[in-house]
Amino acid sequence: MALTASTTRTPSAARRRDADGMAVASFVLGLIGLLLFNAVFGPCAIILGALAIARQTQRRGRALLGLALGVADVALLITLVTLDNSVFWQFG
Image (cartoon, rainbow, N blue to C red; front, side, top):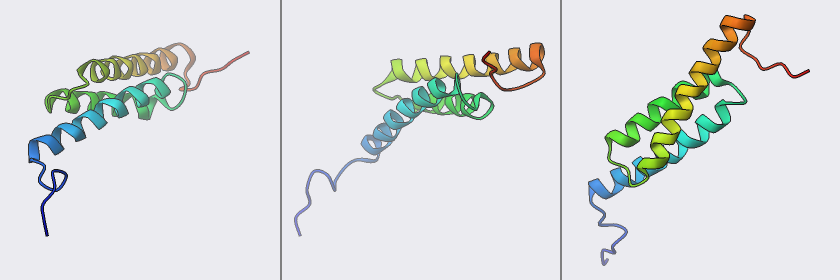
């Protein structure tokens, strides 16, 4: 059985690919967290963004944006709890 390039990946390449996925997930969770479940998605976005940066992702900008959106989610949560005594948006 011959080894192909896909089966002989180095651990660092797989780790970097995982970090790229974490960067994208951080961005998506941070974006969704602005509208829904910011108490859950905000901290998840922060953790995934920090892990992606620590693992030297190729998508550093997306990881930083996910990190910033996660911080914005947490800030929004704190603001809503402080002003409204709730964790939900209320339209109307």
